[in-house]
Image (tube, helix red, strand yellow):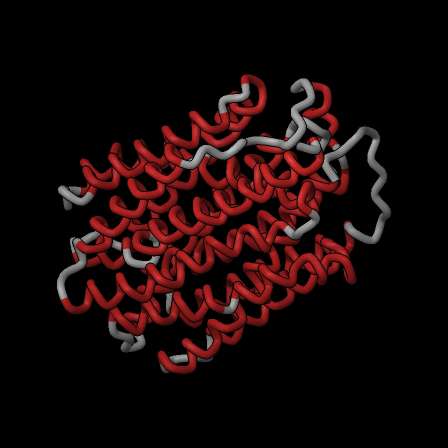
Length: 398
């Protein structure tokens, strides 16, 4: 068989497997993330305690993600680390479902955070390499996660309303274990398609590159707001009269809006570049949060969720691409771990704590306007910083 045909067939198989892994992981996450704050609230936790647990996940996963990424890239342990992540994340969430004591929740949430940390960076760095090898966009592979999330948030919302809130834990554990079984039965070549020697000097060059540093700073501001809203959106919907099933529909509508962006992000990036798509994303985020500050009817909030695709999905696909264009070959997982840490770790940590404070001491109107202003600050920083052309001093993954 022609070596080129063999490589193409392997990449095609890896793309299918990655879509399935994204599907399973985000189906599990869709059962947990939108509803865990409701579980905490109904267990008697305050807004600050809810924010603390959310922040604990974020800071612990932030501290763990980069070491996981470095170990994976340096020793080629991508697949083994992914399997450990699926297994132990499910185990800690199973244990969490058996306690309502805040003091016992803390170590369980901590353990979950450490083992869930490497999953998305491993999948993202592999998907970028496979997409490049196949001539498709990252979003066309990542869309599997959006589909899994849609199904999960809708079904689990119905289950919680008709049965009880414990179903979120059962659904999460089941999805994670099924995804683990798939990963074991259908091996995927994890990590970069090409694996040059891992190099500390290249990492230093990446982190000191002006365009990367300012991108991460602007991303931090925008994702502080996103992290706050993600952690308190279900409580906001509950407060304006939405049922559990309608809350699930709201999360599902947001995920549905991701699919066109995921599928056509490659074309958009081809036309306006990853920089242009990031500017669009940050602008829509700011408009979205400010509009929420005027809404007190769950049906209007439901409609506004359609902006999620032009905000989050555009940010994800453009952000991963933007950083990959500037990443030295061989540091793919490490770079995506840094991106994940800043976006969904450090920024979301600050957002969770600030959101918890505003939830306890302010109103949701103030909540959304404060985070709308923070998003505008991130947009302005990125807009100014991207005016200067970027030049790479090393070979990248682009």
